[in-house]
Length: 199
Image (cartoon, rainbow, N blue to C red; front, side, top):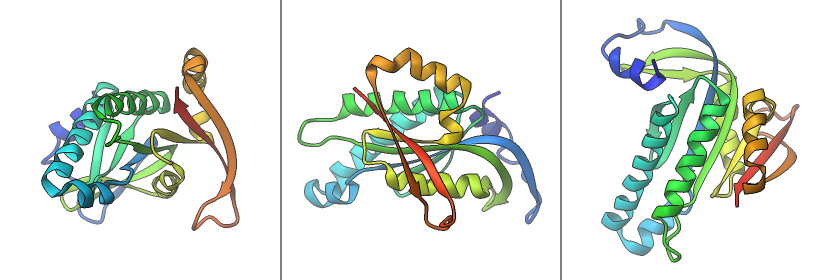
């Protein structure tokens, strides 16, 4: 079963409040829509919200197609979970392509996205399954490095063999650049990240 099917099938089943379990390795994705605040201001609430809904539909379809699950939305941002890094990367590429198709020259829908892979803890919070831990914290901070229309990959995602194969297959269509940076809350550590642009 996919993560979304599991969440749907067992929506009424929950961990006891305060109980937590390790779910092993997950790929966590955080996305945001670039310049959405300006979009609301420039074209008004109703038209802007229509575009935001289109963006959610594109993400939902792409995430489901790769067996992922939307964990939660925060404004126009999305947190999603996948079992495998390559599935998450394919989903974000599909979402980027769908949003480009929905965009106009004067109103581009630019998705900011970041992917990180590692251990996570599942917790029942507000009657929903949520994920916590360093993997989630790092993924949420990586999204700030995305400029829109690109994806930020952590080293754990980038070195995954399936991801490497996918990148080799798509190499002519991709621009890949690496950079080293620090992340708020992890000041003693340097992170090697990769930015992917589809051409």
